[in-house]
Image (cartoon, rainbow, N blue to C red; front, top):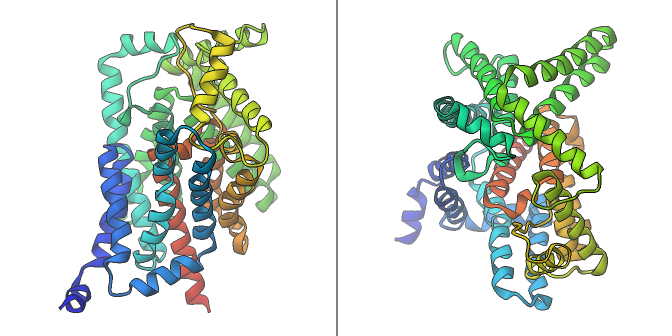
Length: 415
């Protein structure tokens, strides 16, 4: 009876549904992310092919490296004193097990199916961005005044940094789909995607979040430099690079929110260069928190302080330097430094291997779109502890395993 039910269980449908849920969850709710993660995980277990699924997962080197990172987080509980926080850190790493295993049930993706998922993501981000843009325009003066004080325009999930990176990636994908001439049925769809890309580009500048803008402009420069050398059209490439810088300069004057953000940045930068490194300021806060994380790692270089004690250790350093000042204590704003502080050099090496391996395996760094995703990921990890947050982890693993599914499917067809 059970075998008969498993044979008719719609595993492919739930796999597609879960991936769509992961994308929608990035801008709706953590509950949606959790449900989608649980769905795709159990979709691999409640499956007539459970043995095959587990074997495929065990044979995937990227999945095993990510599992290794989770295992080190778990082991660090042996020398962590704050068990409650250790449990919280390990909970954030459970997707390193659940999503790689769950994605095994996703049917093989050809180029069209992959692009359909990418288009779905673009549409989701466009809808979410429109809501943010309308809210900003309805509260134009209030939000621009907030930016002057270092605050941010309200965004979904109350996470403007990750939202800006998601919008930047959606903008990049929209232009890629346009260049690739991807359509579902009608030719005009290509131009609709192009218009969406333009609007996402505008909204990203309106958001005035430097992380997202850094991602966008870095990818643009990478694209033009690569094409310049590939096509050996150096003059045209040089002109395009100048246009990128001109667009950035013009945007500062065209968008009041971005102008205010840049003005606040220079205000903080002046404080930092004068030695007035106050943790209450956002840019200084990033420097301070990252410095504390590095110091903690240096004090515990081999195995780190333990994932459970990182928060207490950072809090202690804040109190030593700032006493009872009303400062919001922040964890290291760099994922590599965060891992080094928690797990030491052993954990850092494994983490770097886990992140870098998919791009170097079979020379996948030659795949333009995958390399673009790698740039997005690297910049995110350098400026935030992105994989200590549910949204960041879901974003990373969802697109990583979508791309890997496509590459593996293509390799299987060529053999």
